[in-house]
Image 1 (cartoon, one colour):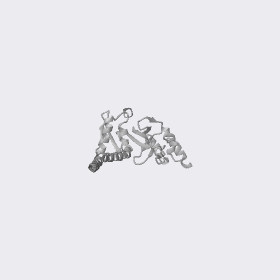
Image 2 (image 1 turned 90 degrees about the vertical axis):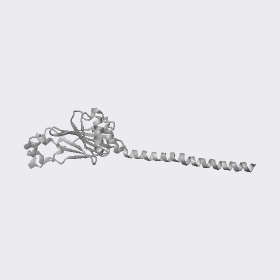
Image 3 (image 1 turned 90 degrees about the horizontal axis):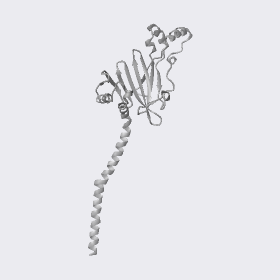
Image 4 (image 1 turned 60 degrees about the vertical axis):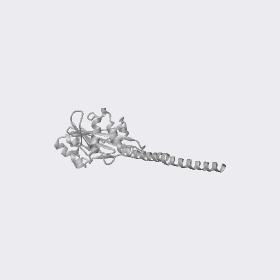
Length: 241
């Protein structure tokens, strides 16, 4: 009798062991695998988050900073470009605006035939990011305005990110004595600093182009042009241009 009981207990133990093994195989193991898969997906999501951020931040821009485009306009622009379509929308004033470029960290919009808007996400040294925007109006001479924001669109001081904006004289070469009179006479006519600013879609540079001569009389502008330097380029260094 004792031998039979021991045999039964041994069989019961074997059966229960098989049941537990089956339970682990069909219930616990898949859960562990799913957990590992979730971790991988989460890591992938973190890696691709930067690629999604420019468009997400653009859509979430406050209406107060986007007088021409509604949130629906902004979302439609992104959807159209990602669908390989022209990203043209009817803005708040019933006119046409078009997003012309979209990447993980850069956006450019032709707001009107005379104005453009650019946005660039710039990584700072502590792994956070700031938004840099450039608005340009050409009426008819182009002039730009630059601003910086947190990623939730709180305005930041420009001086925190640009040590010094270019001054008028930064755009001119110092003439030799023979040309000094002609230069000084023409330079006195350049009494208003106008410049076009461009963010780069391919790298973290900021380009300043003098447009002041375009509003001057042609004869005076022609005398000044030989002394104008190439556009001034600033490079992002992790915290500042």
